[in-house]
Length: 347
Image 1 (cartoon, rainbow, N blue to C red):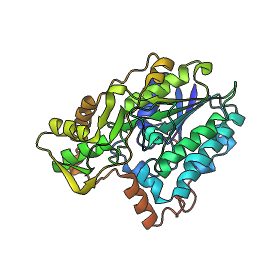
Image 2: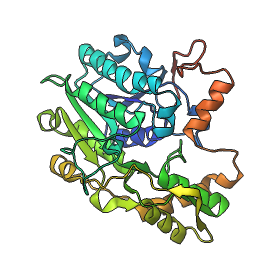
Image 3: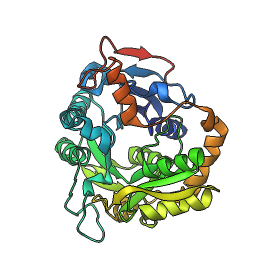
Image 4: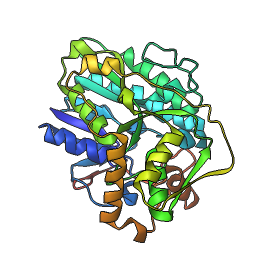
């Protein structure tokens, strides 16, 4: 297949590109370029269209067989930066992209959603049949996008949304505003594991490489099995309390001390997730990276790239606020001036 990966220059993008290429697909990219300068190292070069997804045209999508859609305002702090922009990108632009894709003859659209949809769960365990209870603009935008995309599914256009568990793991464009990555980076760089909550909230976890493998399987699975579906991606054994995650990091990063921020209290975002549906729809899907392996791999890569010597943060909100302060982005998170271009060797 000829597959477009939107957001290929973000956190999951580099791993997604390599996984799809290893599966035999021809992969091209589309990315606004917010975070390309924050990459820790080069990733596999592919032809990339520098374009905000709000500005995509039908012509941009000609000749594609499938779209893997990662490009979004990508977490709760960013979602609060301006909720109207979050909904514009994560809902309106996402559904519009799928509409254009269907018109352009694209046959499959795999959407990256989030278990943040479950938000402040009241049930002990949640699954795809549980009523979503998002508590942030980001979580609500994911629920709305899923609903809009499902309406577009038909016999010629297969749509599936993956509610990914909380991602973790190393990529060339690392984020440290995700719980495992954040705690591991703090332990490695400062010898400090600091919790901003009491650590009692539940989080399901999934490694970025396991996410990418699930997307690769979604491209290969018969359309009639997955069309219109919403599927949790992760493993039941990888539901952890935040304090348990911190304890694992402390055990695997020698010399790191665990502490709580002043005033740390409960986090209302708490959910334990079941993943039976993924196992049923994708029998070959298995999470190969448990938390412990992922922490060890993060530390090994931190050592390899010399993270201690780099002036680097990996926090998405900080990066966007800096671009706004410097006048490169406007208040709607659009680059000032022309940004649409083909980047032949970007990744």
